[in-house]
Length: 185
Image 1 (cartoon, rainbow, N blue to C red):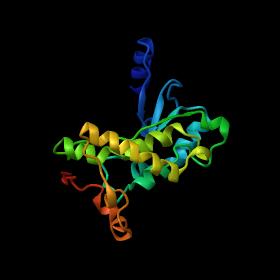
Image 2: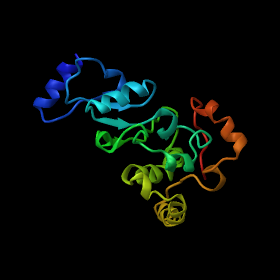
Image 3: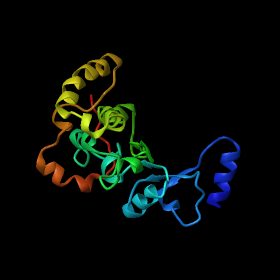
Image 4: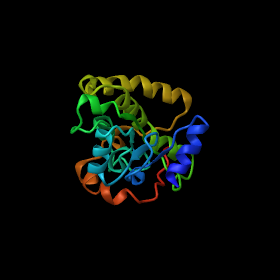
């Protein structure tokens, strides 16, 4: 069925993208996989065989996770190109996604808080080669972004919420499935 859907999309000038669970023998070449959880070795092998992949690692890129689980520094430090890949294989990592599942987001204020400024960190991470990333420079430049957010009325995360203390981070895994209800005023 996956191959039939891929063929239909190909005819219409589109491309099938499916969670990494679609990676099976016989999958058409045009289908891209989206790596989100488990089976990392299988995804790396698929990349080495020429499969295009979008990286959205559940433990690192999901914006609906609390800042205790994914603080701003962890978002910025994320590297979408697996360390095991050489330069030739790295070209098959065609993107990075930072998903924001909104089932437990009660309002716009909470959406803003969960998304910003981590989305800016993911954008720079996705567009910058590893050797050009600079956390100190990013933090300095983030101040001008925050001024823009203020002017636009974006209710982004601030201060110690961006980098929770170690004891909150240690408990961060327990917040992954927690309803996100904090609203910033």
